[in-house]
Amino acid sequence: MKQTNLFAIAVLILFVSSLKLNAQNSSLEDMIKEGKTIADNAYKMYDRNLFLKAREVFEQAYNSDKSNPLPLYHLTYIDEKLLEMSLRKGNEDLFDKYYDGAVKNAEQLSQTNDWESEGKTILAAIYTYKIANSPMSAISLSPKVHGLLDDAQKVNDKNPRSYIIRGIMKYNTPGIFGGSYEEAAKNFSKAVSLFEKQDIIETLQPTWGYLESLAWLGRSLEKLDNFESAKFAYQKVLSVEPEFSWVKYSLLPNLEKKINK
Image 1 (cartoon, rainbow, N blue to C red):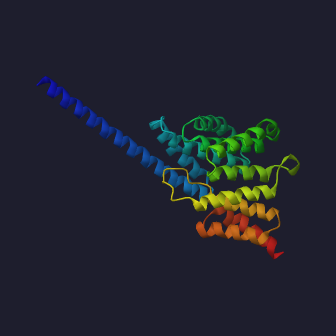
Image 2: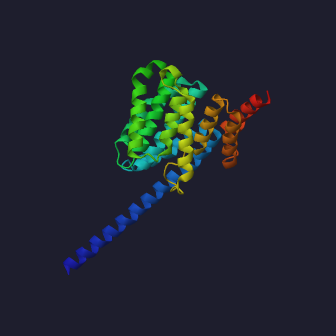
């Protein structure tokens, strides 16, 4: 009789624990979905306040389960975007605030099973922004960026985001140091092709990059004086997301002024 009661208690404990775990997982998923919705709008509108709001959600999700790399990835992605934004807006304080933490988190992802390619890619992106912020750091960081991207593509050569970051590096590096608009365009084209071949991605996973790869492809084609192809790339962005602000309010209008001249 006692053994039966003990068995029943054990089953009840397992059942309650299972309910709690399912509730935690559901809550975590809800937080990640909420954060991604905000982040997608921030990405589309290039809005710092929305990025910061998304960051709060992802930080809460990460703190609720630090064993799960998914919220850590999204948190690191937001920090990477804030670093990029700080450069465009000339806000060095914002850069200094998020750089060290972003590097630490990206390094952790780089050593996590199934996240190595994404982690190394985002770490490479963070280093490219450091180079832009402090050009002398290129001496030590440029080899690291290329090594990280090589490793990321060895692990997963179908990761389109790794080609975006390599393309940005090629675009922004002076020709005498290995930069090339032609090579940049090839990498962005590769990223676009990989995105367009992907199946529907599970909504909690990383999904950013497609619009960005098209925008950067257009910029590279502009540098190569291929204005019509650049315009096609920009128009393709707006056919997917009509309110993508970088293209709608900056890249396409500026290109059309060039063409009209």
